[in-house]
Image 1 (cartoon, rainbow, N blue to C red):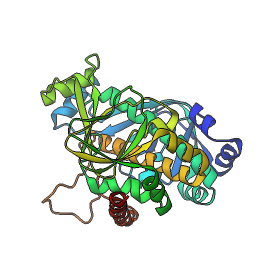
Image 2 (image 1 turned 120 degrees about the vertical axis):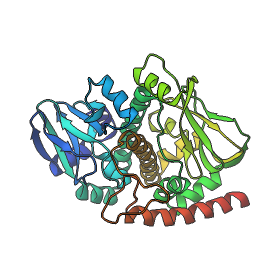
Image 3 (image 1 turned 180 degrees about the vertical axis):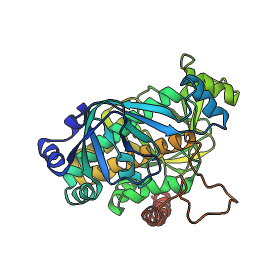
Length: 364
């Protein structure tokens, strides 16, 4: 297993995974996951090599640009090559979406497949396991996100949707967690163009966005050919490249609480913005003292990372269906940005919690 899993999980956790999962041998060319098709297992690559790709179509300039880099192949864009110990299917576990990528063995490989239903039951019943597992998944997803940011550089990580933003943070935490944030956070008003987090800089707090908007950007790397392709398509040569805009309910600075890593993006307000500011020292102490809070917090970070990664992959996967305002819905079609019933229920609860927290923070 990867260093991440070995570092974050204990021996009993690993024994449970080995005892619950089943080993599968994959010949080269075997498709383990197909984009848009439901998953019933989380897979851990024990040995061998897998490739993760997003589907493309021939009739758009971005697909042709990638095809030029891939010697004319338009079947898909290679996102990553996975080596021994990496995890496949964690995004479906976290954000309840269909896979955005196709994963195929490129050499003889072996995976450990853990049924999602059994894994979900274990996470519900064993809070200590959940805290360790969700922290490991948060690290793995952040690694994938940073790798794709570095490689692609110029694409939206997530749609501009405040409703979905609220879902992740306030749908995962419980009422006592929100009480703690209100009691230990400071309401902070920021003018437009205020930098809250700087790429590669130290992070001293977690910011929860209550109102306004925050832009995430990365520094352009002229050495990256994919970055140059996006630059040519968008006619934009600025050194700082915006990759996402965050609205209410999102948070920034969270990566510092995963494994102490420095942020891969710069977060800057685009207009007057109000955040709830929680100091790093207070939050770090809470994570050490309250195991239930820790499990929910790391699941929240995993959900945010999974959604940003899904947004990036969906934009690259031009052949997938997306719903657009004014479009007639087809009941038999499944859209790439469609939320299922469980997610919609969480959204309703999250919206109420956010409104309550907003009022409480004003009062305090």
